[in-house]
Length: 206
Image (cartoon, rainbow, N blue to C red):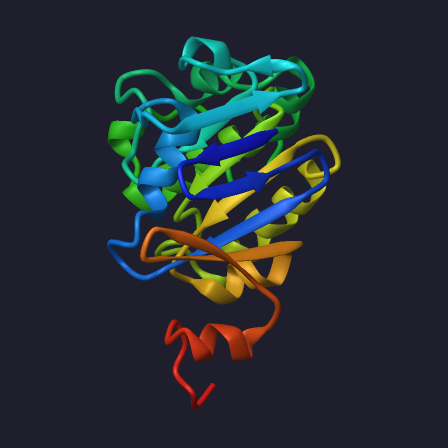
């Protein structure tokens, strides 16, 4: 998938995990929304194979997106929601997941936001899309659950490409093949932690 938006260019392909870092207000969430199609940009150009993806309908089953806000339908059981996003193989897999199985008969309105967040993230990670955008997937999660999500992302990256943004930068660094820093409207590819320190994203003491 080729993504061009004004002054920057980004390429993502199957097997690749791309991490996007940046301070609050840098535009990371907006960038993901532009790629997904819920925010428009006069200068965007997104191509998958030989097809230009002009609208959100063009991106159906090609790009999946985990927003920061909870999106699960409150009054449907988790068991009925998972098949809306996943094929039968991945639905069966999630039905047996220790992170989801205890909540299959529950409705989102009856479980915590943290539990909803984990379920949403796994549904998007294991969706049928070829590319997955994850906005703050590790926010407020315990180290154990974050590790499980990272393992799921790595496993599914064999079949799809990922673009991840999260303020928990270490979680992103752990699994990303490429890291970009979004700063003042520009995407800068980062090679090591020293560059993040030089651009004042990380303190010099790390």
